[in-house]
Image 1 (cartoon, rainbow, N blue to C red):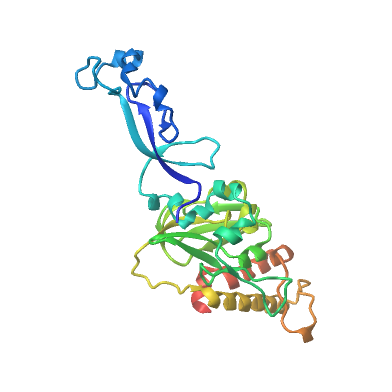
Image 2: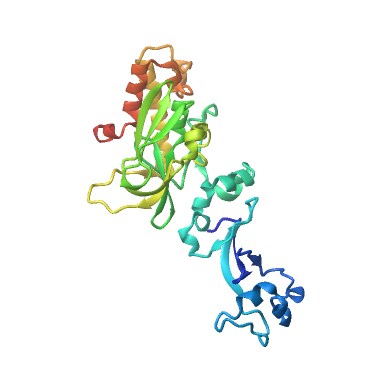
Amino acid sequence: MNCPFFKEQQVKYCGAAGYRKMILLDGADTGHERCSGPFHTECSVAGRAGSPQTGLADTAAPVCPFLRQSLVQYCTAAAFQKFVPASEPSLLRCGRPAYRYCDLYRTTVPVDSFRSAGSPPCCSGLGGQEARPICAPLHLDYAPNHMWLDRTAPGHCQIGIDAFLAGVLGSVEQLTFLTVAGVCQPWVVLTVRGVDLHLEFPRRIRISAANLYLRAEPVRLTADPYGAGWLFEGSTAESSEPDVPLVSGSKAASWVSEEYRRLDDYLSRQQQPVTSGHDATAGPALAPTAPLEHLSREQMLSLFSEFFSTHEIGRR
């Protein structure tokens, strides 16, 4: 599936000119163009260059020998059309479902249309309570520390955090990438209220890019965790180490539901003023939004280690 703004077309340009100006063939007015007819001999640029083979002007050629054509790709959503030589579309983000993570695409397409046109469905709702819907897109795989992996194409993947982790974090002051390339476990440091929280995806991938825009706008991470807040892009890497199991589909909804309940119980055991404010006879309630904003430094580190530390995965 290609991005709707991704286009491939033939262009023409002058091979003798010092500046290569490409013109789309589609809709070009070749009838009044000097290069495509016998009047190309009147062109001073071609005359000074001479024939590409002999170095002399070719007055008998029906079209200019310096007229070139090429297949290019470009984005119609960009304010300035930049033509690049055509390559296999699947090698580009534009030629796979990963285009959903493109900033230009997301700023061009209305937000409401993501649910109807581009975004796969989410599991939502917990026990009939509408106050805190569970958002767990069905097409994603989830790690035990609440990071997701999107297999955008065979061998390609995108990585980010889920809505559960985004809700626990609240606002992130700073984001630092510890890995930006190579075969490794993607690793990032999130700074919340001056406390550095280390988050590491529990599988090795070949990282091709990190979402460095988040360093300037860390709010994207929690405001749009399944879109503009993505963290890493890359490809799956072969490893002799056993893979940490990931969960997806309807199992992900049940797992996130249980995680909300576990967080609610965890906060209750802390005997802090951070409570869900629910009637005990009404059954389990959902944990409050952004609980890290109400905890001490030690409590923040303890909660983060319990739910989001890679080192705790094997002990659960």
